[in-house]
Length: 273
Image 1 (cartoon, rainbow, N blue to C red):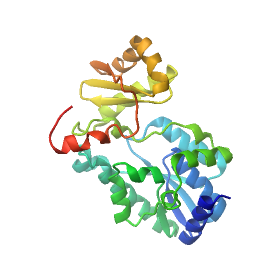
Image 2 (cartoon, rainbow, N blue to C red; image 1 turned 135 degrees about the vertical axis):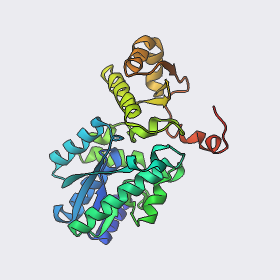
Image 3 (cartoon, rainbow, N blue to C red; image 1 turned 120 degrees about the horizontal axis):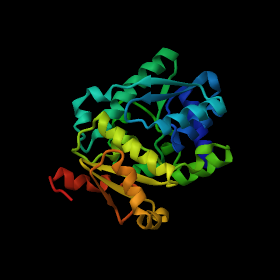
Image 4 (tube, rainbow, N blue to C red; image 1 turned 30 degrees about the horizontal axis):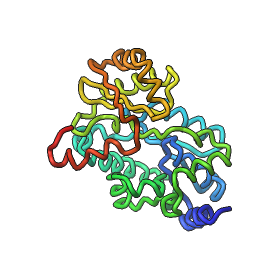
């Protein structure tokens, strides 16, 4: 066991029993699987928050991995859509979403007699704009992957070693992250994004984002898929139009992690791109 994994094990043992925010993404799946080995099924529970911002494909992964690997798992409804601070989509939207999530998970932890609530933040997240991490600190939610210094690449490698199907899964944040800041979060808009992304996935694209800018969709593709998207633009654009977008644009810079957050200073200053 590497030093980082040993550190992670010691953190989990220190926590004694844990309630894990479990999205079905690479990080939370690895954390849940590792915690199961360290603590056993009686002292851990993976909890998925259910809302219109959670894509069905992600929920299917969360359920499937929990079932196949024997991870204790439940789902709870979250009510961030009742909070106008969230639906107005400010630059710190994630703070309000995570605040709601941690309230729900803290209640679940208390109900099940679990001592510590955990999230799946990793060491790479510390360098990005993550207002949701403030909500975690306020609720005394721990981030053991981050505390152990595990990066996304290391988590993928360890996930592969454990046989987890998520080891090479593209990052998949919530659907609300596809809406440009200031564009109100609505079920209709999230549905448009989810339908467009499902259609692109059916065309064989693997790592991409459909960014919602009101009537316009901006499609970002990973560098390895950008050339194909440009050459077969008609089918990609059709997928977005059939989801309800009037205009569809190709982002020639391609998909890059944190692209939406790069515009945060401009949004705060009232500058548009």
